[in-house]
Length: 376
Image 1 (spheres, helix red, strand yellow):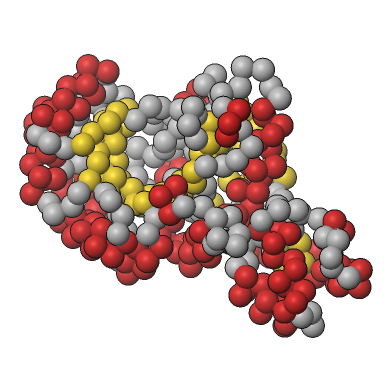
Image 2 (spheres, helix red, strand yellow; image 1 turned 135 degrees about the vertical axis):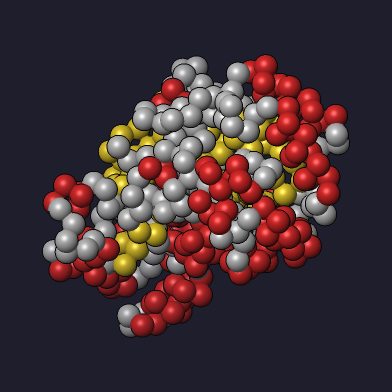
């Protein structure tokens, strides 16, 4: 058990972190330079299979480090091809002594992550925290208690998990993954469980690995980080990566937004728009995406649409609005807008020059859609 507890996962270590880690453990920089591409380029998660690593070094690696993936305790498939995995991490060192045995086994170690195949891309939706402390009223994850941040290795483990499993999915009949792209993840969205900017340090390490041309080599245009509206220094720092930014707006006035999103009391709409303007300037991205969840009787009427169009036309932010029809979940108090209301809301925004789409919901039948993730 002692060896198990001290094994450090290497999945989330950048090249420089890996070298530092190896030096601290009596290994060489050369060892690190050899191991890094095996993990981050070839996705080979077995020290024994790293053929250019001396056997003596591999023995040390197996004793002190891990490249193990979390166990998948549930894998669900939607009628539209979306897949949701419940992953359980083996991290006893993170658990508080007061946690019950059942919580120790389940709540403290598990997250949900989603794979979304489409005609032109394969998208992985990543979780960054176990639970969420933001308390957005419409979000199923927000109804779960916050436990802890995920480490960079746990964040990256979700990428490795889906990479490993994509090829297995392809062999299934009626799959939606296009043959020209069926073996690769094309897009990554940090839109799963948790608020990425409240775990910025670990998220930043994962972003470094994903963007590293000598590692996963993703384009910054293929990565999106979503925030419920944390307009602090971490949002400014995120701009240095140049990745796409999605901000959960969901209302055009502070009273409505505060009633469904407690974070608005700390960072109101005016604050968010100013932060979005800074992000555009600093990141050199072409636009900001504002997510707008349509809730029947709350923010989906004509007045709300006109209010939103005026707000965004006044702002100095080149943006796009993603209209999201609310995805219900057990115990929620909200009702989804009807399609006519969504179409009318979209027409009003478009007629006033606001780029707008109604986002297609994916995986709602397995509670894998926007706002539905939760460890039950």
